[in-house]
Amino acid sequence: MNKQKIQTNKRTIKRNENFIKTAEQLKPELLQTVAHPDHFAAISEDLSAIHGWRIHHTAPAAELAGRDYGKGDHFILDFGTHLVGFISMFIKPVGSPPDAPLRLRLTFGEMPVEMAEPFSQYNGWISSSWLQEETIYIDIMPGLVELPRRYSFRYVKFEVLDTSPKYRVAFEEIACRTVTSADNSRVKPLIHEDEMMREIDKVSVKTLQNCMQDVFEDGPKRDRRLWLGDLRLQALANYETFQHDKLVKRCLYLFAGLPDENGQVAANLYTAPAYIADDTYFFDYSLLFVTTLHDYYFAAEDLSTLVELWPTAFRQIEIALDRLDDHGLVKDDDSWYSFIDWHEKLNKQAASQGVLIYAMKQALKLAEVLESDKGRFLQKQLQETSSVAIAHLWDKQMGYFLSGKEKQISWASQIWMVLAEVLPEAENRQLMQRLLSEQPGIGLTTPYMHHYLVEALIQVGEKEQAVSHIKGYWGEMIKDGADAFWEAYDPNDKSFSPYGSQLINSYCHAWSCTPSYFIRKFHL
Image (cartoon, rainbow, N blue to C red):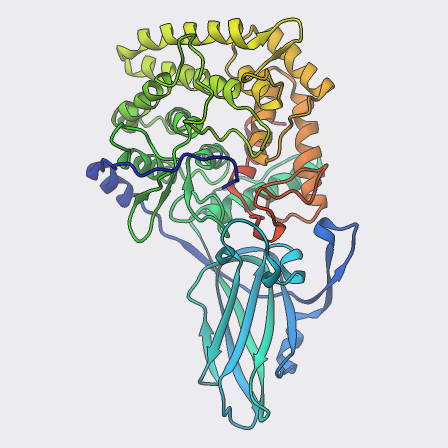
């Protein structure tokens, strides 16, 4: 989480055991493969590289068989691609029988910076325990060692902290047992004339694959949880690639099975040691339950799930409407939190109004499918919240939606109001063209919000601009070394971290996987 104020308070959870039982029955089998390192690697400082560090291959990993190491020695292995799984190795002593334990430190990195900068110098503000490092003691050698903790990495640094003067150690059979619930055989090959778009699709699919575990995780390095905002985007990409609709259904039932006493779904869930709702609630994320259910129904045509989960979805609309003031605007004070994007200066009132309208329109479509009597109520609320948005947030002279007391102009406000279709189609297109041309200062900081920018561009018919943005943003990430897409990326400030340190950033993150959705769904 970011330093911005986030509502975290204890609430009474009203468990729906039937929903939780359904989710448990949908728990997937994890598919496993074995991966081996490709090369030895060295790290060097390079100010032209992302984060200032570059990896160089020095020798094939096969040469490991002829090497041994003593106290103070270290080496780095590159597995050649991003992996999520469990590492193992066979360690044997060289020389005299080992008269003292081997003390070994393993450092796992998704990016070169994690191999270069000591974790002891970490100064971010979220827990350093997320840094992927393991110090182990090996008493009996030779023998096979498998680390019990799952890691997300491409690079591994081995440091022999101590042995004894009598022996050295050699490493054999280093391997990673990868795990995912994504079946690659279900992904149709992408036929595309643009090499960059093919590569972006490949990395998108890899990102989604590594985040698909027994739920859709937000990131396999950190936080390893089921977040609603990430789920919505992962599900979209999944429908066009792995088609694991049962995993989406499982996640929806988990959220619906763990609401608070008011019926609100949490922003994220833990799945171990039991299914637990986190004490974090976001205005926009709760509404995205409606959106995710909407997308799921129209992808899977699963009417029975829609019937069961519709009351939970509609309740999120009711709770959000309780947040409106006398004018019909989302109240903008210190008593709430809406995520929208990582930007400390972003006022979120207008964007949140847009999310509400967007979700209500999707709820209305579901009500029509169900022939629900809630449809008339939703029609009325949509008319009122849209009219209020134009009356109080739209500045016709400036040509932008304004947010908060200071009447802030931000990208996020315009994007969500376009997605909500508050203005007529032609004016929405003009607004997006104006946004790209004038580029207001309160911009976008995460692939999450860049997804919604591309979605808005496609919605107003600006497909060429959508392609240009995908290539300019996700393509630039690939040029900076991404083999899975990242949690946070600002091409104009490549040192950006919402947590105060690049070491703690997630470099395989669920909300960045959607280029494959756009490329395949809309034939970009």
